[in-house]
Image 1: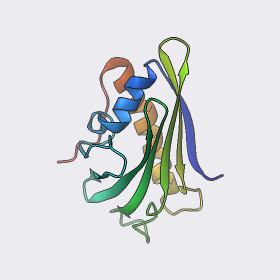
Image 2 (image 1 turned 180 degrees about the vertical axis):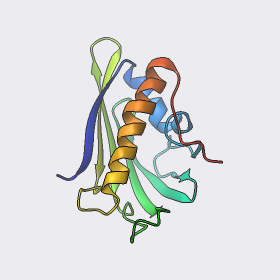
Image 3 (image 1 turned 90 degrees about the horizontal axis):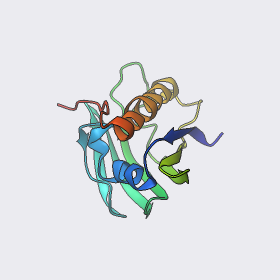
Image 4 (image 1 turned 90 degrees about the vertical axis):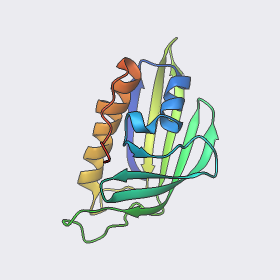
Length: 148
């Protein structure tokens, strides 16, 4: 396994999904986020003291997004390493499913089961993909982390 991977079918157009993962991150992942709509941009996501500096590595409109994790700090006393995401990649592949739906293939390359943060991160991604991004796109109501 090259990393955490999930497929999500979303009742929204590929354009809507693409916009949500490039410009609408604050609506479903964390309110402490920047814009990811330009290749080469480094944006930051914040979850309390936990943060990521992410470079937008590739954008193919309505088809593919690649994020490269340049720096990661995971604020969790249960972990002996706080930088496990550094050097990993997040890949979003979108394809139309019927007239108005999208098949989203999500992979966090490098986030593997042998990592200390695996269980925390797996549960986090499952929540944000299935309980926040999907509902945000289908009903307009996501559940982003409320970064104060």
